[in-house]
Figure 1 (cartoon, rainbow, N blue to C red):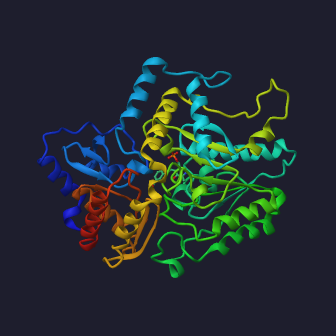
Figure 2: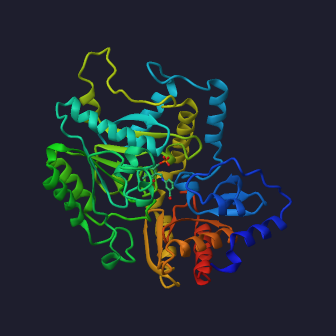
Length: 456
Ligand code: PXG
């Protein structure tokens, strides 16, 4: 690594220039973090507003990833802040089982109204991981309720990310997230991923090649028989594994095959939901209606944890056949539809609506973003640039025998320059808040250009 980017050197420089003392850092075991090296050179965020964070030294940092793909309306939005404050004062908690509170019903109506026609029921969870495991359980119980109880197999996709719970890692396709944790769910299989730089490098928007990869589902059917398969889950755009845009026609073909074989199709829209692709959901952007959508993150603008499963009326109705007094779905969380999350969700949807944010990515700003990031094409180490809506991926040639190091070096350099990006493998991911303006995009690209030119 470039000596100037050595974490210990950076920390020494930062602390020297700052009067802020660091908190004790021993007790906190940080998630998905290299704990030991982080604690030697911490990156602490202490304040946020609009498209900016400030760190503990008072330095401004442009947020190139909407926090972690979630703060779609930007930080510190007044309607959301006020909604949470008022709700906390009025009623902190209401039990969700055999009880309810008005804002849970209101938010469900509002979310369903944004979803594709016919996707009319909303089940609340507290994260994307919980939404995914809820959807998988719903799929199994749906078939059983219809007398088709042999449909127990779940099909994911290589390079999929569906959170970190056991269902999600089982259908997920990231080896590091799976290999440490035993066998996961039984009866899970995976179709091939769609990433193919040999045919699709430097595509703008949807890559031209690869619709036929959806036919991999036919291989699953030939192997396992359709009568044993409950559901297929895919991210319309895979985010965490490096911004993999679906080839033109791929999702439509997957939908056709699922319909043909009686298999439920689940779109995991934890990242693509709430405007990232230029429509409220990627299902609408790509013109493909799944049977269920999982979402989280942008539903509350990241301000209070929340996840949800949006289902087709037909999925819900299959459960509503027993005696009226019987519980239909034996599932739920203490904090399903938490009042603070619902209040944040309503404030968020108001903000999105007032500012036209859910379709902004499909307009001029999305075009500007595409042009800007594709201008990095000739920079050192860049082997692909890809984009859709306000999502971008810049793939770097890995350093031989040291995968991830080059991209992480770029991440650290950007951080030093006052830009927060996200890296996965040797891919730099961008997903700025949907309120981003052209000068911010210029700054993102200029910063990245500088970092790429001096990357090792
Ligand atoms: N599904 C998808 C498609 C996601 O992107 C989850 C489920 C899980 O959500 P929770 O709320 O349980 O974290 C996600 C989460 C990254 C990164 O590297 C992305 C996520 C989480 C952590 C890191 O970009 N997405």
